[in-house]
Amino acid sequence: MVPKMILKNYPILFIVPAVVLYTVFSVVPSFVGLAAAFTDWSTFYLLKPTYVGLQNFKDLFESTGFLGAIRHTLVYTALHTVFVIALGYGLAIILNNQVKFKNAYRVIIFSPVVINPLVISLVFSALYNPTNGPINTFLRSVGLGSLAQNWLTEPKIALYSVIIMGVWVGLGSTVVIFLAGLQSVSADFYESATIDGAGGLKKFRYITLPLTMHALTINTLLVLISGLNVFGEVYGLTNGGPNGATEVFGTFIFANFSQGMYGYAAAAGLVFTVVVSISSFTLLGLFKKLEVEY
Image 1 (cartoon, rainbow, N blue to C red):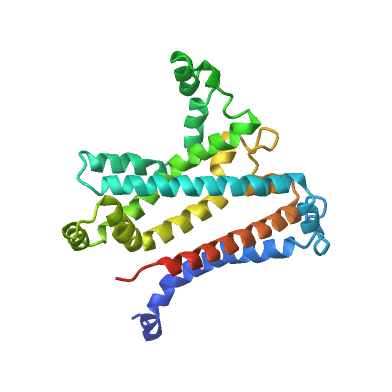
Image 2: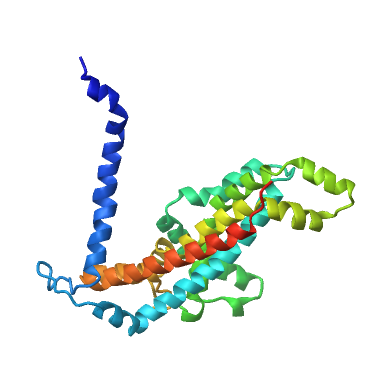
């Protein structure tokens, strides 16, 4: 016989493993990282790290590498967010209408979501190959050879090459969420607007946009966070190069941690957490004011 106490509390038994795993692999490392940010913990002081106060943060903001990583992350996030949201919304509106093979298009658009970013990076590395990559080959074949570039090794354009890949990767889930929002809008609104003589732009301005603001809020927040968290795309394509031209928060932290500068990397991670938190809460508050109840 199973004890009555166990039968009564058996739901808790299913929760305990998840709580333990979350605590061990998320909560504890977070507190360890927070503490390490204020020490000189490194491979030289592995067992006896010394408290150094805000020295790591002072060194960070005096580092051109870290300041460059901040700038590149913000540029990546801004452009990535604008293009993913704009293209995602547009594609969702098209697919929400009666389009032939729209289910096939949905699968094609969503497919990058289920593919590892490093695998996608290999594909784009081949596309960007300056010698025999499809992009430069096409440009030369149509007489636009002057536009052929070293897409990943030219500092002025390398970051934008990474952004293009990031936009393609981010479209899938964005389109799905926008489609869900569009399909939740009652057709009665559009029928009434048509009777009143409203055109396509007015329908979008006064019906579609306000009533899908919740989907826009969710998507913008998710895309913003994914932009700030970018790592796989940069690591796979350029690893922060050339000469730090594509260094972002993720690759900067990873590089310093790999070099054994654990306290320094933890401090960078803490700054990163603050930036993401402030950006997310600010954006969420802004969009909440714009949402419409119906």
